[in-house]
Amino acid sequence: MRKEVIGTCPVCQNTLMATRLTCHVCHTEITGDFELSRFSYLNKEELSFVETFIRVYGNIKEMEKELNLSYPTVKKMLEQVVTKMGFENKEPNANTEDILQKIKNKELSVNEALALLKK
Image (spheres, rainbow, N blue to C red):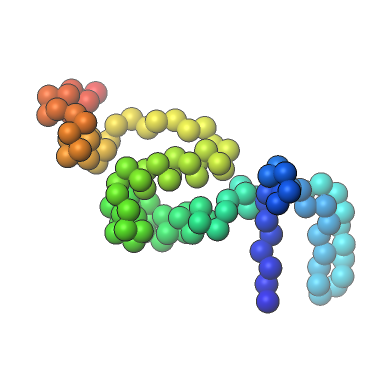
């Protein structure tokens, strides 16, 4: 049974560091302070979200179908994972899909959408 590495302390919620690496074949041991990957700091739900995102090649519409969630919910979850992984959370330039969704949600008028698309 394989055990997965956790990246967050269950007591104080701070990040954990690996301090010993061991080879189970030749029994070599290396000690020191080793950082874990950004993925190690995601909880199981967030990691599952990222795995699904990769499996559908980043297609948000497919994410909606796979997870049975609304477009804004998928976008919000993606932003949360991006932030938790330590990447700068920049709002990307409005793309056509985002603009169309905002029109559908009555967050933008057609004229406002056209102005954004011209940029």
